[in-house]
Length: 68
Image 1 (cartoon, rainbow, N blue to C red):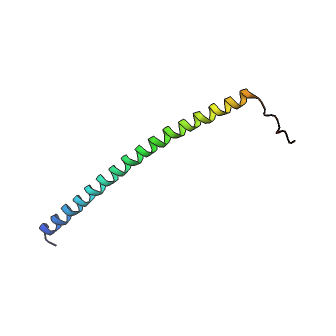
Image 2 (cartoon, rainbow, N blue to C red):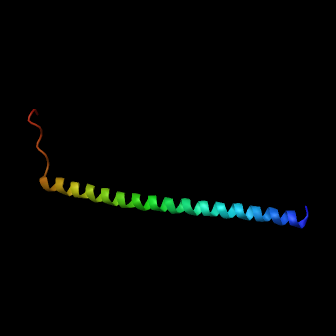
Image 3 (tube, one colour):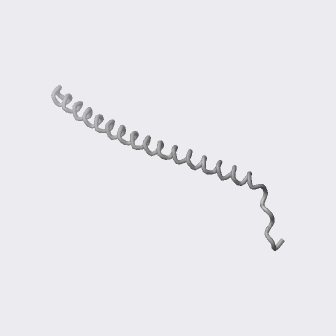
């Protein structure tokens, strides 16, 4: 393999690797956006569950249904 062919091959590989790195960077950024959104959603749901639990504790135990 002469030096020119070798240099061309290396340039092609470098270009392909740069494209791969850009793709991976884009994918990681998208995943972080999804993780961020899901984290906020979980926090919201946790707050709602805690609020519902507090409200049910304030009411006291429920009376049994009339057919018991």
